[in-house]
Every structure is written in structure tokens, then in C-alpha cells.
Length: 403
Image 1: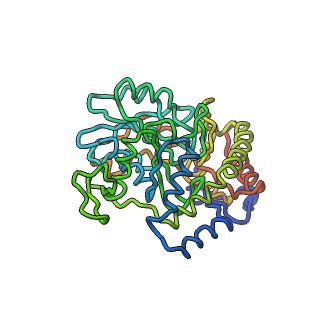
Image 2: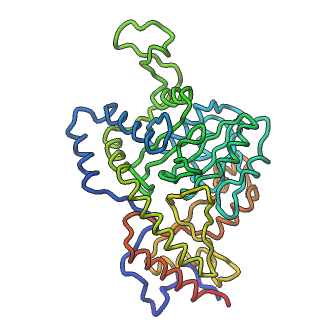
Image 3: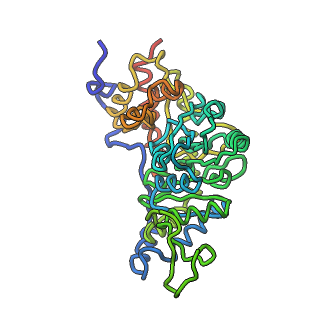
């Protein structure tokens, strides 16, 4: 009889591979980060100060984009990108279901309708041909998601968007530091959004940004993220009646980042190359080890993407295992390896079911969900931590593997 997931003990006499738990993601902060925050706390400005401009300039240098707008989180970045793209009632926006809900929710915020395209079964990114098949006369934009940090197929998505006069937005919450076809993430799509949540490659607690090369989109992003208010005289409809004067031009939102967060993120971006190199090193070690285990599969990487991974996805091969994904998850926890699952297909959620979405929309995405686990991956992992994760996976695969 198959055991319940919570009854699965550690293998090898009940002794787990490690004594202390290791989690799937964790931020890394050092003395430079602490000093950067403390300096702001001792300064005159906690918000709307010079650090915001400094951060946005740095984001432009890192991403290669002409313009950057910092916002309060990655969801806000997606929302203002949709607003800047003119998404409104009745508009359709195509995106992936294998992502955090914000990638689709941002369309609903604008009273548009998300349309889900299926994924590529090798890379797990949105499949351009599935995108093409979902286009209708109502389609206004495509939101490609750089899932796990690997860039979407920007060449094909750009071609599709140009053919159909669509705005291309990439949700690059996972891919800060990734290079696609020689260009940094953030400099290729019409707009690119980022998240700086603690488990991302760089963090400021929360925080987000949108980058673009289009000045018109940049001005709209600024407006929508800052109450719809401007002090720029060239944009005003009336003659200012004093130096205090400003105008509200749009119904915007208060999505501003604080000086404290901006200072922390500037310091974190100073370490991006180091963070990226360590994540790549861990991924190489995982790939080498797991590619030799027939009970699991590793995510494939396209040649064009020099990827800095935010997440490491291990895909189970059900026909080679005596246990299912839930039991494999529990077995890893028994070894003190705390993993996760990224993501539940967005249209599985009750809220989306109420909107008329049903299972079966994206068969490849749904199959991936049934078979995947997220393993620990972050800068602060030691070589010993990495080996413990590998040993745990090997042990479970061997013990529960089928001949």
C-alpha cells in the first residue's frame, strides 16, 4: 500500500542527509547593504530623494535600457506596464499559466482579459506557436514570462508582435542578469518588468521596476506609477501659476519606492555579477548530477539565453518512480531539504474559475505542474549545501525508483 505523504520517513534508517533544514530561497545581505540603508536613515530624505534617480540610472546601465522607472513591487511594475500599453476593457493579453498570478492579474486590473498560451515542453517558457494560435482581433499585448530566469524566445515573440501590431511586455521578475542573444534582459521588449522580492537574485525587501527604450512609454510609466501627477511643464495643459504647481493628467497610483529600498537595491546591484556567477555554478553542479538520474529531468536551456536562474526546477519522470510528486516532496522534507512548487497554473485558482477558465487550456503546462519541484537555489548556499540536496535527490530516486 502506498504511504501517505506525511508518513514518508527519511531513508537509510531514519537519518536525514542533513541536520538543519535548507530552504528553497534566501536573501543575502552584507555590511555594504547595512551601511547603505543606515546612511539613508541618517539623511534628510526617506522618500522622493536622490537615491531613486541614482537607482534608475543604475538599472539602465545594468539592463542596457534607455529608461527605467522604479516601483513598489513587481506586481505594480506589471500593472503600470499594462496601463502604459493602453490595456482596457475588452482587450486580450496573452501570457503563460506557469507563473505567479500577478502576470495575469495585471490584465484584470485594467479590465482586460488574460488569454493563456501553452509552454514549450523543454524550456517551460511560453511557446510562440501557442501564442500565435491565441491571437484574435481583441489581442492587444503579449506578456512573456522569463520563467526561472531563462529568457523567453524574444526573437519569435517580437516577430509575432510586429506582425500583429501588439505590445510586447516581458515579465522578467526571475531574470535580472540574464543575457539574451548578447543583450541584457530589460533592453529588448517594448517594456520589461522586474521584481526585487527577497528570494530574487537581488532584493530590497519588496520593490520592482519597468525598463523601456521608448520615451512615450517611459512618460506614461512615470505618470501611472506616481499618482498620474506631473511637474513637467512640457506635459501640462495649463500655465503654471507658481513654482508649487503640478497637474494630474491620468488616474495613477502611488507605486513609489522609498529611498531606503533604493539604497539597498543599489548596493545589491553592485554584487550582481557575483550573485549571478554563484547561481550559475550551482545550476551547473545540479545539472551534471541530475542528468545522470533516470527518475528526473532537468530544464533545458536555449542557446540564445545566458541564464541567471532564480529557480531550479526538477521534473520527475512518473513512469520511473513508485511515488508521486507529493510523496517525493515529503521525502525531501524528511531529509531536511525544503523545496517548493512553482507554479500552480494560474487558471486553476477559484477566482479564475469564476471568470470561466477551466482545466485543459494548456495541457503541457498542466502536465509540468503535476511533475515539478523547486529545489534550493540561492547565493548563500555552500558547496556542502549543494551536495546535500544532490545526495537527497539521489537517495530518494534510488529508493523509490522503478527498474
